[in-house]
Length: 286
Ligand SMILES: Nc1ncnc2c1ncn2[C@@H]1O[C@H](COP(=O)(O)OP(=O)(O)OP(=O)(O)O)[C@@H](O)[C@H]1O
Ligand SMILES: [Mg+2]
Image (cartoon, rainbow, N blue to C red; front, side, top):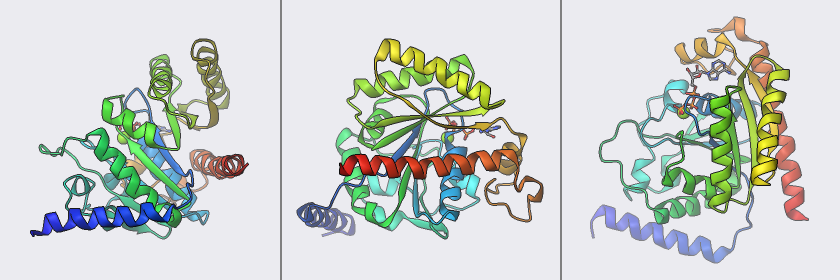
């Protein structure tokens, strides 16, 4: 039997064994999404993950943007093992995990691969099956998805426990967030839909943006959305990406950003998520 076939059998054996154990469902998989591109999904998922890690939480971040993955660039890491190896049946998911920082592990994505394997609904379900087998090792699992709502992205979202919809205050982004929320209901997503308003001038504008979105969602979709928080529109973000140094990692490279408003806002988003998951788990237990 060749190595690849051996791996597939190993994977199937592992899945059967774990399925037999009937592990408890946790509810800690958060997918970051947005209709419109460039709203800040990658920036926020990476920096919120880092903020949570320094708060003592264990995080696994999965870069599930199959064609334009960016997480490794923001983290300044050369990714040798990427998610495509899982879908090509070459590696099991745990073998693709890299611990980048204490408490913060990443499964890196792929960029510009011409032969990225076609993702069927079955292969995505299989991915989530393996991801759930890793749940007990982490406090939060973040998935950074590609913008837009193609079939694969909707399948990823519907398999996740919670979504974090990132919008900016621009009406085009808000409209696209509305469409994502509508599609989530359409694919039977039953988790909670959390909204983050990114690139907002200030809190008032973020509140107003959320209110506008909520009014439309209440009226036309009759579904619930929650406001998780906001982050400002700050030139420090671009500087940190140019320097390939995480904004939240206040190193000597970027002393001027330490304690800046945006780092406080991202810490607040992370803290809100800790409160949120606490309440969600109490609800689930009840
Ligand atoms: N709070 C912010 N303030 C200023 N600029 C920001 C902020 N958040 C993100 N950006 C900028 O917006 C751009 C897009 O960010 P990012 O790549 O995180 O978005 P994305 O939603 O992941 O995009 P894509 O849809 O292409 O995956 C980047 O150039 C980043 O510098
Ligand atoms: Mg992105």
